[in-house]
Amino acid sequence: AQSVTQPDIHITVSEGASLELRCNYSYGATPYLFWYVQSPGQGLQLLLKYFSGDTLVQGIKGFEAEFKRSQSSFNLRKPSVHWSDAAEYFCAVVPYNTDKLIFGTGTRLQVFP
Amino acid sequence: DGGITQSPKYLFRKEGQNVTLSCEQNLNHDAMYWYRQDPGQGLRLIYYSQIVNDFQKGDIAEGYSVSREKKESFPLTVTSAQKNPTAFYLCASSPWGGASGYTFGSGTRLTVV
Image (cartoon, rainbow over all chains, first blue to last red; front, side, top):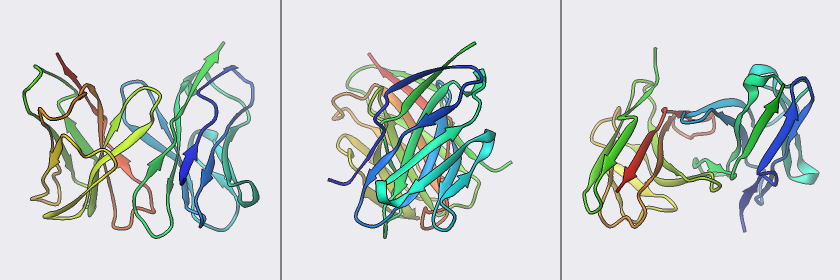
C-alpha cells in the first residue's frame, strides 16, 4: 500500500547532539518530499522540500535532508540540536500526478539540556 | 503579511450540534485543504478544493461538509453525524498543483462535550 512511514514515534536527545529523523515512503514513482515542524498547539511550518536534482537539501533552522532513491528514504538531520528544536516533525509527500499532501504519523522530539 | 487565518482557536460544542470552523487566506492560492489531527495519527485529509465552487472528499470526509464560494474562504462544518469530532483541525492552502508545499493556519481545537 502507498504510505509514508516515520518509524520513530518519540526521540530524546541532549542539547548539542546530532539528530536524524527517519522517513520512508512507498510509492511507485518518486513523490515530492517535504518535512514540516509543529510546535504544540500550532500549525505546521515547512522546513524543506525535495523535487529533483541534488539529493541533499538544505532547509531553515539548520536542518537538512537527504533523498536516497534506493532506500525510498528522506531522512532529516541536524548536526547540533538546540532546546528550541523540541517539537513534532512530520514527513510528507505529494504523490506523482496528484496535489494531495500525505503525512506520516510524526516524530516527537524532546531535547534535554 | 499574507497568511491563513483560522478562527476560533478553541471551540466547545455540545454533542449533536453542528459547528462551523472558519478558514481565510490572503495568499491568492487556488487550492485549500482541511486536515484533522489526532495524537499518534498524523494529519488526515478531510476535504480539499482546487477551485472556487468545487471540492473533493479526502480520506475521512464522513460527517463533515465544506463550501468554497470565494477563493479566499473554505469553511468546514462538523455535523452531528461525525461520531468523534473532538480533534485539532488544520486548514492549509497552496498554489495550483500543491508541489510547492502548503501553508498552514494555526489550527482550531474543537472539543465536543
